[in-house]
Image 1 (cartoon, rainbow, N blue to C red):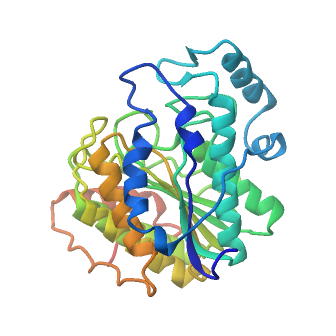
Image 2 (cartoon, rainbow, N blue to C red; image 1 turned 180 degrees about the vertical axis):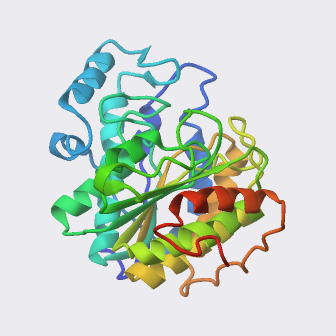
Length: 352
C-alpha cells in the first residue's frame, strides 16, 4: 500500500526486452544507468507495478491503423518502422507496458495517493504521432496518460512540459487544438524532428496553448533555468493546471552523443526544483515525470539522481535564483523571440 504523499517510481525488467540492432542509441542498457540512481533512493520510493495499456487507452491518442501497423511489424520482427525506429518480437508488449506505467503513475498522483514520481519506461514516446511511430517512439506515453486522466479521473487542465532535447512533435500535435492541455517544450533548434519553432502556438481553440522555446546548440544550465523562469512559470501560473506531466529526457546533458547542449546534473536539479515549486503553487504539488530520451549513461544517471533528490525531499527545495538576462545574450534573444509570439495573451512575458 502506497505511503500517502510519497514519491512513486515505475521500474520493470521487461522494459529491457525491446531490443534493436547493435549500436542503436535507444538500447536496453539506458535503464541500467537510470536504475542505479533509483537504487540510491529505494527506501524513499514506492514502486508502482507496470501493466500494459489497453486498446481503449491507446486509441484515445492513436488511430486503429497505428496500432495495427505496430502489431503487424512485430509479427515480422526484427525490423524498422522508419530509419530510426525499430521493433523486436517483444516491442508491442513493452510499448504497452510503457504507456500503462505512465498512466498508472499519473493516476496515483492525480488521486493524491502519491505526491509525485518517475516512470522509468522505454521505449520513449513524445515523437509518436497519432498515426505514425517515429524517432524511437511507438506509443506517445505522456499523451496517453493525459487523456486517461481526463477520461477517467476528471482532471481538466493539464500542463505537459517537455524538456527532452528534441521537440516532442507527436505530443504537440495531439493537443494543438485543445485549450485544456498546455504543451510547453524546451529543445535544441533547428534539430530533429524539425518542428518546434517559436511561432507554433496551436490552432483554433488551442491557439496560445502551445509554448515552444527553441534553443540554439550549446545552451547550458543558465539558459535552461532562465527560460523556465521567465517563460514557463508565468504562462503556467495563468493557465493554472490541475496536474503537471513532464516528458523527462536527459539528452540535453553535456555528455549526450545525440545533441549539442551543456546541461549538468546541477541544471537538472534546478529545473526539477522550478517544476516542483510551480506544482506546489498551481496544483497541490501534483507532478509526474515520464522518461523520454537520454543516450549517455552519465547523463541518465546524473539527471535521474538530481531529479530524485528534489522529488524525495520532504519539503520542496527552493528554486534557483532568477537568472540575469544579459543584454545581447542568448537568453535575451530566446525570451524575446517567444515573448513576441505570446505577449498578446501574456503582457510582460519575459520579465523576471
